Image (cartoon, rainbow, N blue to C red; front, side, top):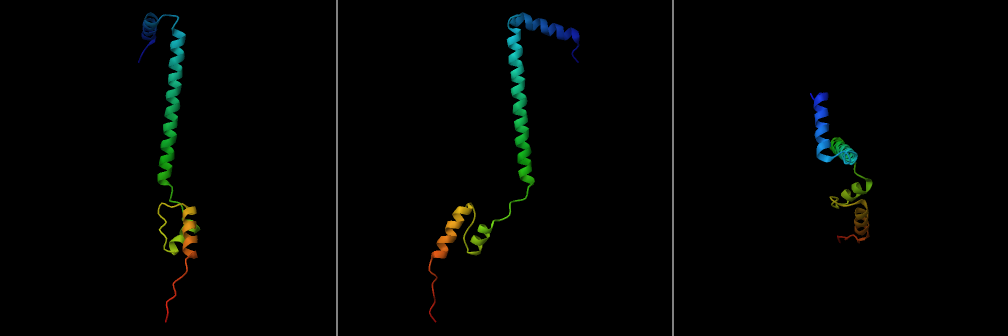
Length: 101
């Protein structure tokens, strides 16, 4: 553990290296650096928690559009509901083939 005499010696070395005029500027820059580090740390912790939460949440239920598309034999993988609606509409507009007896 660093005691008082060691802290005084370190402070003295800093004053000798940077000069008394530069100390306030140095302290400000160190303070802003620590603040930026803590901010980045909080952001990374937040994104990690969101990622963990996304892993533990169940997959969303299928929408009615997706269910209808599947019933009609339309591949739903990688398609939005709007795209599926277009495909449903196109397939329902096609005339059905009638087989003759």
